[in-house]
Image: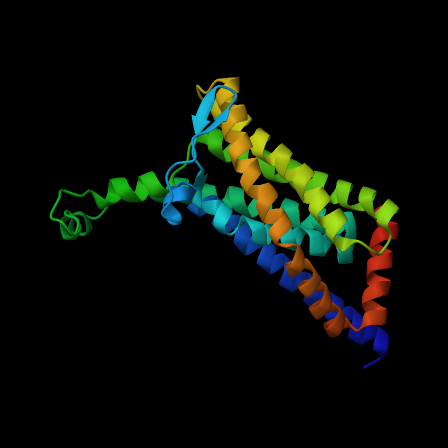
Length: 262
């Protein structure tokens, strides 16, 4: 097998692996995002009650934020080695799969439950009356506004991330990975935080603009913090990928991605 063929095989394997990580975590984040958890309670702390635009808010976040940082990191790695086209391809495919998942969930939640299933699961562990079909539908079925908001926010933020990443690369060259990765994430996630809430709860819901901005600020503070903390993970990923491809071939792939993204 020639060196060129070996490199192409490794390049394909790398893109498939990164795409798989990206797709799995983005889809899971959408599905588990219906649960809201208390960030303060997780660490045994009292509510923060941050005063933002006239509202006092705690760090109540969707469960999806637990794994969403993996999507941040994977986006930047795909961007670095495969350029804007690589991010665009995997982002569009992810949106299609998310919509497919929601379509399947909509169909499944509409199916009539078997009576024995209802009877076997009619009480919780404390003996309280429990309707498992209602619980199942409540967890998995999301409103149209939330679906549209999350999909639009995801696609816009990913494409913006790719654009800002390579705009910063013009000034940093191959150095300062942390700057272009963190900078692009901070810009894209600001837009993501605003768009998803604006579409889902302002356009399709009954939230005021002040509440949208207040909750978006809480979400963005979390994402800002995580983006900074994940910087070492980016360098580790680069180290592992450079070892897999070979430093010279990895640099060639990065340079090619930068040129194609201009």
